[in-house]
Length: 336
Image (tube, rainbow, N blue to C red):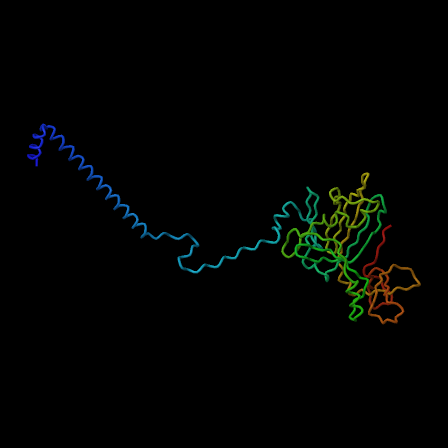
């Protein structure tokens, strides 16, 4: 081959050196083309190998993922949101009012904000769990010591609210048709106040007594054309006991040109167990008395009156039931 090239080069007038240089360039170019072809082939083979390896790898499924073709799993039930915040969280700034015996209901007080809360037992809720409420003026410029009102009451629960109900004792319960009609038409207990349930302590409801009795619960705010400002009113006394809870609040009675303070006392009392043995005394027109009057629609229509009149009196029991005249078990003591 070299001989042929030499002869061709001589014919074309090339020198031997030029022929050698041409041969070297031709060989170098061929080597480069061969290298690039081999490089492309190698890269193609490597890519094909990587793709095949990737297709053969099984990746781990994330937690909770279902394998292909598997039926969907049922959703996990979500935890129910509590109806009320925890007792410890809500009452962290309150201290329980200490008592020597289990009280009628417990009181918790916040000294910084002068806020008072009550823990109402579950057994104290419902129309069969009645109690007594009495209000009186304990101090102030008008009628100090004057008793305003006293009545039977009970708490009724409606979802997240406690409703303070006043019992209507004016009608006698009966089973005849007229009595039932009258009861449906007129004989309904009165709604006095509603307060939200702040939290629960076991089965007991926690309510804010500020919202219940730090305002115009007694209805004296309208005297003189004013109103009660709860923000300026303050608790003076609160004492829970086994048979009753005593509360005293200094009300701010506001009017257009200013205001004044009036001390109100509330007594919330448990109906004594001995009340079941109490026998009402029928009123006698020959003597003076205060009365509780009830209309009895179960009486015959030709009766002289439909009213039952009873004397308001203390419950005195004989120390010796067999004696015609006996000293009382619990005498009434008057202090002058």
